[in-house]
Length: 284
Figure 1 (cartoon, rainbow, N blue to C red):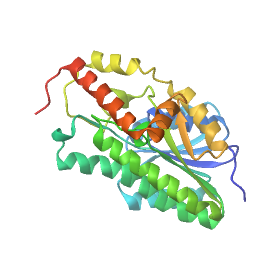
Figure 2: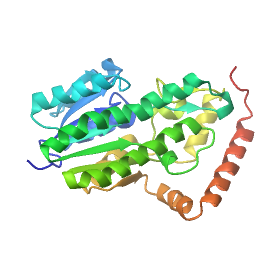
Figure 3: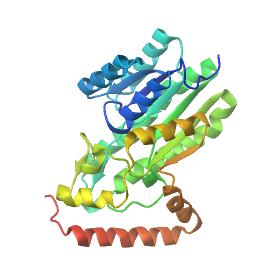
Figure 4: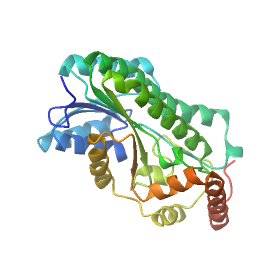
């Protein structure tokens, strides 16, 4: 049985109740995919699934904590038992912890690593064996442009996203001979709740007025999540290894690859300018 793109395929999307995850789930369903919307926010996930079903798509919601490896494994097993296959596994759930590294407590590190890194690992661990047995499948892990470049003021987030890039590119090389595709998704700035405090389960360790936060992100021209999802799924269909959307962020990535010292210097200047502009007290 070959991988289906996307008509009559089956996909699991974690973090699917809102933001990037929800946009991906809706676009997958629009293209004919049966989608499992997995999220800790089960009410929002059920609402999103209802919208998809009402518009003629096929979707179910599942309550899922991606930090629970056994729960992720159960979801994959139950999905395959119900549908007979798993074409796509989108390990998308993630949060941000914003603020300088000196403000972090160990619980902040543990919190973000458990969700952003182990959440992906649990999804890979659950799906990869199933897909190898099938002889087909595509794992898509959500990292970030911050996983390809320096990201001062967001050190913990950047740490986890660099790790997700490493997992994805290494597994892609390993899995290709087994019929399993692996891609890493590196969004630039997308208009989601994570831009205003890290999302529901994220944390901000500095006090930044919402209007200043919005003004900062608007300068980077956030992309609408629905347009983002369309572009991402087009790239997934082409089996792109590293998917950077919006595409203009590729310039920054390539600059850092060719001139890493310059990339660090530019990131440093940008961060210092931002801190001077905000001039806000740190949380205690």
